[in-house]
Image (cartoon, rainbow, N blue to C red):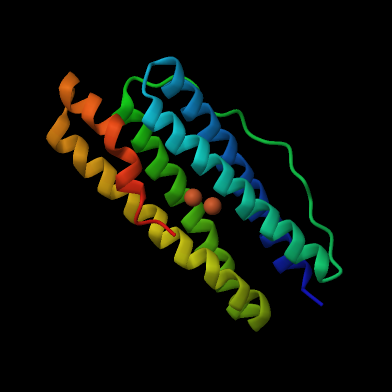
Amino acid sequence: MISKTIVEALNSQIKLEANASMQYLSMASWAEINGFNGVANFFFGQSEEERMHMIKLVKFINERGEKAVIPALDKSKSEFDSLQDIFTTFLESEETVTNNVNKIVFQCLEAKDYTVHNFMQWYVSEQAEEEALARTILDKFKIIGSDKGGLYLFDRDIENIAVNKE
Ligand SMILES: [Fe+2]
Ligand SMILES: [Fe+2]
């Protein structure tokens, strides 16, 4: 039995993961159109991961006899100035998700719901990894700037940057 507050909190997380999935799909599409196939692949993969994060929550809620709410989504950002803009959006999106994860963890402690608290630890770890990845990539742009050769190499090598992820 999960309290109503915690069920609502978990459902809010479903929406954030779903929004992130669509946002990354939009970024993948922009990258593909603009000839950055490495970045496109990266975000197609990220989009898929966020979808899995969402489904993990849906199943968790339903398996505990509560009801997952499949939400209407916000409109994704689809215009970007540059690859740097894309990865800045990536970091901001991950920070938004992290904030909500932290909020839920706090609510679990308040409600003394250690089962959901334990479940949420997976998301805590995941968010730490995702933010570290986004920051590592953004650091590269401090070196590359808008140098075309640098962007070309970045697009070619991004798969190797992402390799350290689980
Ligand atoms: Fe996620
Ligand atoms: Fe993420």
